[in-house]
Image (cartoon, rainbow, N blue to C red; front, side, top):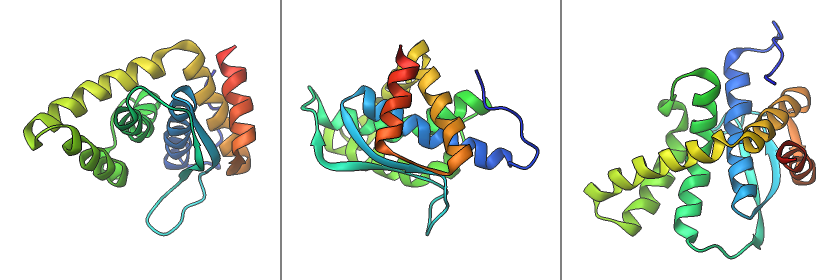
Amino acid sequence: MSVPADPNVSSDVIATAYHEAGHAVIALALGRAVQRVSIVPGRGWLGRCEFQKGRVRPSEDWLESEILISLAGAAAEARHTGAYAWEGAIADLRTVRRLAVQRASERQAERLERRLIAKVEHLLNQAGHWRAVELIAVELLRCETISGRAVRHLFDQGCR
């Protein structure tokens, strides 16, 4: 399954839908509740994946989970487009770097980031996760903003 071609939708908007869907899928896969996902541009962003406050399943490694969620948007977009668009994910990269240096030195942080990019790509390559990304991206292109409940439903549907 892939997003149907629509001549009225720009490739940038489609890429943004995949980007935000990637954040949502990896967040849910790691036990983080999603409040809403949107591809409506705002001040300084093309889309947003918002998380429910206080709704976090305890994880073995909170810091790693947050880095994976932050990298997931660029990784999902890259899987769809065939190339990483790091310039469009600058805010995510800042978050990743800030978290990575909490775990490792500046030099080791780059190695950690590369390892976690590979890990998030592996998670997205799981058939159910990728189906969920595609289902969420299609719904974002149709509605522009979807609730966390709808995102969870599409995630569960994709993972079946």
